Length: 142
Image (cartoon, rainbow, N blue to C red; front, side, top):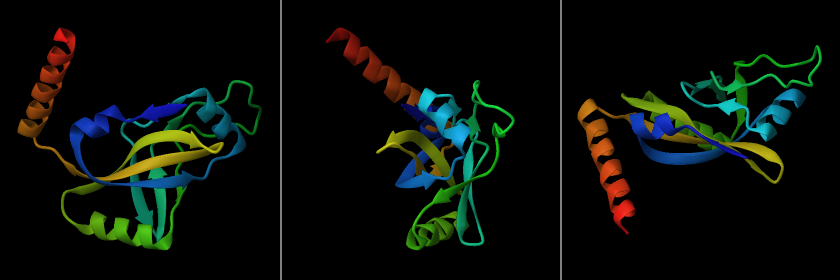
């Protein structure tokens, strides 16, 4: 199971990536294993030297009971102090955002790949579209 945030790669120029664990409750991990996750419009913030992922959509588990989770709740990220410190320093720079790029399972644990990204301007996005179209055309002919 692997869920990518395709919009993040289009909207941001990714400067650095970090792998973080994510704190989930029982029904959330079951939904993650099914692939019922959407990372679009999600972001990472740092409060009290702790990293939190906001606005990640994890669908309710159908077989869940009254203990089912809230779909867009704030989830704590598991990172080392040094990594959190670097993320905090990067976040303080102007125009820098921390975005979830990919969620996947590693050794039966949910991991979140987060990236430090700089927002692209409109002309950068046009350049990305042009580059993608050229690659697609070259693959079709060979």
